[in-house]
Image (tube, rainbow, N blue to C red; front, side, top):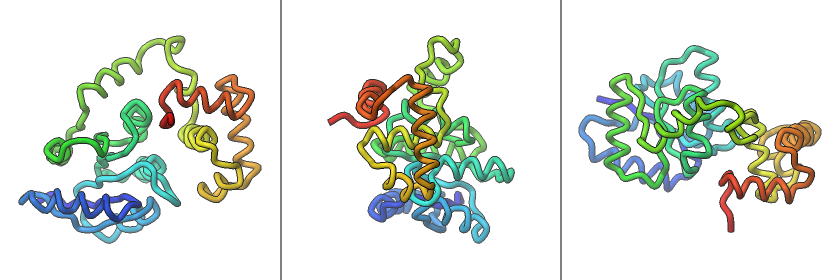
Amino acid sequence: MINIMIADDHPLVREGLKKTLLEESDVRVVCEAKNGREVLSLIEQHNLDMIVMDISMPVVNGLDVLKEFKKNHLKIPVLILSMHPEERFAIRAFRAGAAGYLTKECAPIELIKAIRKIALGKRYITPSLADQLAGAVQCDSDRPPHDILSDREMEVLRMIASGISAREISEKLFLSINTVNTYRCRIFEKLQCKTNIELAHYAVKYRLIESE
């Protein structure tokens, strides 16, 4: 039996995943979390074989959870199931320690396939992601500028480009406004942008946010 935690801040998503997994005789959902902090708390209370987790969660996001796992040498494999396309976060997720990455648009059969493969101690990589990972080893001159951003800088970039104010960002990420502005300055410097509008155009160009 594969004991799984589902971590997603949307109740309907969690219910949908449970319904899908309940149809499998070798998979059991033993607990749920609605944010990264709950994930870190619940892993101490349950004997888990795997976590199916979103990236965009409040309080502590999925990437930060993965980093905590790595920092504390926790060996529970994590399958990222995200609304974000692979080109946005998949490589970052694998670098942080994920065992697999799927988008929420994937077919249920692919989700089950990924879970079973990861339960065997392997990684699950889609063909399109395999191409990205191969491209990630190319020379630095061919990499887009945002590849050098930290995960937190990328998160702040996407929020600024989406029109979220510094005060709102500070509240959502539990950071001071001064810290948010520091991140903003670093992002502008690294991407050679001068205004929020330029940053938004950059984000749309590289599909870091959804274009309207």
